[in-house]
Length: 273
Length: 273
Image 1 (cartoon, rainbow over the protein chains, first blue to last red):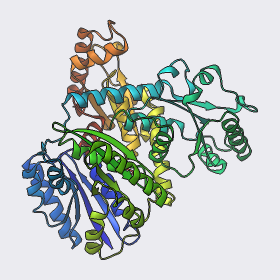
Image 2: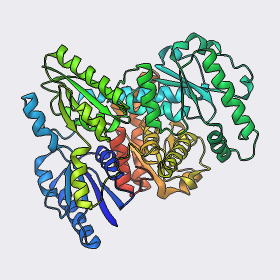
Image 3: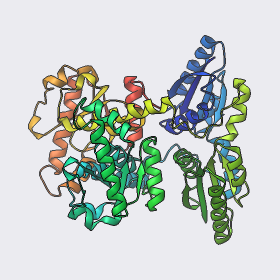
Image 4: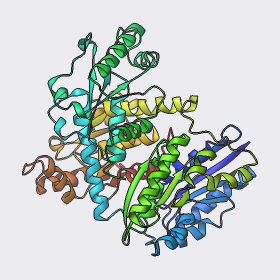
């Protein structure tokens, strides 16, 4: 069975995509979904064009598309509601009960992208991303006093993506530092790390998975060999235990899961939403 | 007026945060919200602990907290529903009508983090992030044949964060290349860029904002001076017009907005959801 799914928003549509996709994941064993996103539907013409596109898809499929929408402005939303589709509303569904509970009217603003709040969030995020890039891969330990967290681990265990995700999504200042072959055996924390030990969080990984990842990068090298991956993982984990460093296994976890688990564990507060 | 808000999930809670936060933004002029996220509520004990925390907050505030939840498993969700709170459900609200419309039962899986699909998404995202990092700031033009898009512009106009966001959220291979003082006047596309001209997308920025951003980095330098910022922006925009390169102004747009607008404009397909 095939079914078309639309995500429609007057802003980026990313929230509609994320929630809509996690809902559809519950049906993907039985249904083959075709996804379309229509972002920035913020005037009547764009709304009419979206309706035309949905209706043409309905005609082609011979079945109603499913439309997830997060449109704030009522007059735009009204147009979308004319489409020949199953409409699921992620925004207005909740606004009415919230107005009642809070006893105030909602401001029905389309985003808030020019507010001071948003400019501040923008600056925080930029600073955090720059921090992650400037403190990637142990480039320097000079700025560790400004770090919220320092992720450590073997090469290719997930430090860089996790640092960047923390910066991008939460505005957290995350440095990362790799332990390499040269540190083995008996890895020690260098001065920069030792002085900021309370900020260190370890990553580890299944050696087999590490071998696969490294093999993509440098096939048939010592670096990617199974014995080398096993050795590094064993030594790194021994360090974590010896030094009482909290750590997490990245093997079957997404970057989001890693970021959120580490934040929950360390009680680091997000700087932006 | 003050009000506590909880985001509760059996996974990361990021979707609940994003949608919940955009809803609460409609009331932030009138209400002062205090936000809490409780992720990974995936067993009865954690659910009971969450309820305790919500009820204690209700007692402290003298008013019911607002709880946004995306809990998949019904037995966990049932426990959360006992909390003294206004509960808004981002998941089950939609599952029943979807089951009816699709004529199939949902699989009520908690996430899908061990499926092959997810492993593939993981690999795509990692490759895209590594591509963005290896092709940041004009480091090389050798891999432009693999790029989905090449963002160009003056230093500090938003190229790196936009490239990384595209990689992280959508699995897109985005390179970026800076034009510098040395390219002025009469910026030309170098060979690597000229050969991939159809992949180039320009960023520009308000010179005043560029001046502010650069001043944070190198105060009172030629690099950050207002005349230099004006010159660079003028020259870069002249290039875009001369070479028919599509471009976007980053000044008051978030990284999400930039990424999605550029993707919509170029019809680049996202590789992951």
